[in-house]
Amino acid sequence: MAEMIVNNLRKIGIDASTDFPEETVVSRRLLNGDYDMTFLGEGSPDFDYPWNMYRYVLDPRLSPPAGNHIRYKNQEIIGLLDRVAAAASADELKEIYSRLQEIIYRDLPLIPMFYGAHWYSYSTQYWINWPNEKNPLLASSRTWIYK
Image (cartoon, rainbow, N blue to C red):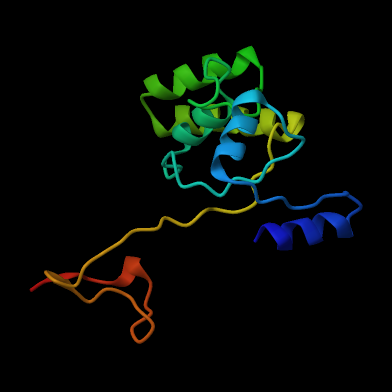
């Protein structure tokens, strides 16, 4: 996927290349901010809930390794994230998330490339009907049955 993204970046005039260092090198570079651009396909934190993603990526109160690896500094983000945590209605959340998106579109502190997959291990010892090559239906449409 990284190679595909780099090839697409080159097509629009951005000189990019891939580098696949050992995990210790990646961790050190992230901690020190020693990179121009990074592509992380990590599964943590759980981005299924938007507050987690916004907080992990943008909250200036966080610093690596806890989050905010891009070292984005915008004090308005703090108030918005705190409002999300205390929001009492869907309309209020919509207003707050809309403002967060406006800030992201304006500042472009990061460019989300895709939703990452969640990888899990499973066993057929007790549960059956998992998706597989012969039974590839989406997990959301499946029912797992206890043996």
